[in-house]
Length: 567
Image: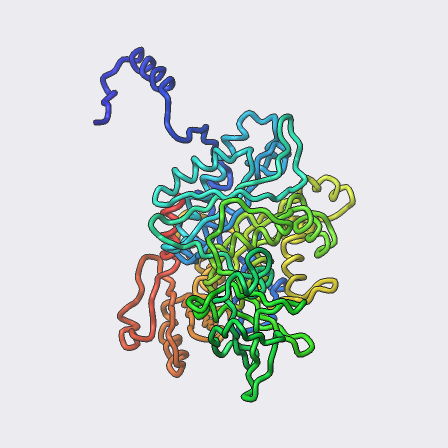
């Protein structure tokens, strides 16, 4: 039962406050520091504006990826309208809060001398994770990487914000050489997997070419005489296993590994390069279960059989040269864009994290709202190239200048020119563009990209501001519906489309009849957004084509979301 303090004296209240402050608290407790970008949304509402000259389009059959320049809290706010419950995987690599002045809070760098740096970091992360959570599908997963500086804090925060999820930690050796400290040389970081409770959503480690082995046994107990029931012929044709032969009599010796038969089949025996009779890895009682994993290799008319390893569960400690953030992070970024970027992730470590969740989800949407150098986008494109599929990414990053402002102004650059040196424009976008178009001797990966920046409209709910929000909501609606191709542009309405769907935006309800005439002969479903100062969807006006349209009022549909997250 809640305590009633209304009749307490001032002295009693002071004593009670002292007692409460001394009481041990369980869980994460911090000094919540108001954040300017969050408070800003009480006065201004975020929208998106497309930067047309940064669009990349290489294949109309592939999905459109998004790069959003701006504070990630504002970007996430917009995505709460466009992508609620639509994200399969959120992968983030936030600032590690090492004290190295590598991130800002309220426009000031946070360094090791800031006594509130941990509280500021928790506040920053909490503000973003709270609204990012709304974007995940029912089986969606969040992966957050971190090092020792905020690891314990992050775990408590994740458990507090995601009570219906399990948190599993994977240790990744990303720096094999180690980073010396006073007691240990740190060579690892953490990836926290936040997984819906009761769901099995982490796939098995996909087998690669490196995971294959010769079907013929080698080493101890590998000879025919030691396992005679595992010496038998396997017949192949057209590069595939056709059937399994019987175990021969002990007195029979085939004499060679590969024998061409009259019916065109090739009979293969487990005989090594020295002509010694060995045995297969599997006996007759189990070989049939593995036929789909058996591959054939031919050289100069000689054939050998190889078996691909069975995909296994991922372990919680990852090691390997491809996880090296120096070689496949820092050096790779410099190779691609010709400049250094501090502490990017290994491309392959990031890809491995993504694969755990979306390897078999060929149309998955992956979000990274601490995009940095764009490693996540690169990894998604590489996955599509390697495994097939149409996975798409959304990258959000600010255009932080990392302290270059003064130097650039002294060179006489304008404010607009200075912005071209920011992270998003000088690192993230160039990297994604070069991965798509190709760089050095590396062939490009076909993909599409649209570039947006965050902008704002006044939050006061006046008629004027509602009209302004509606005018600036076009990009948000196109993103929500995934319809970017302009089909018809009129002063009072617009129509966009993709291959399967149409979006209509009506800025003046008096143009409804004109809009209906425009879509009369179009065969397809429409999501129609009609401007209304209230919550009117004008159902009566569309009653005759109600099976063709899905109606929503704007800007009310957007304001409803913003009222919930900015309360």
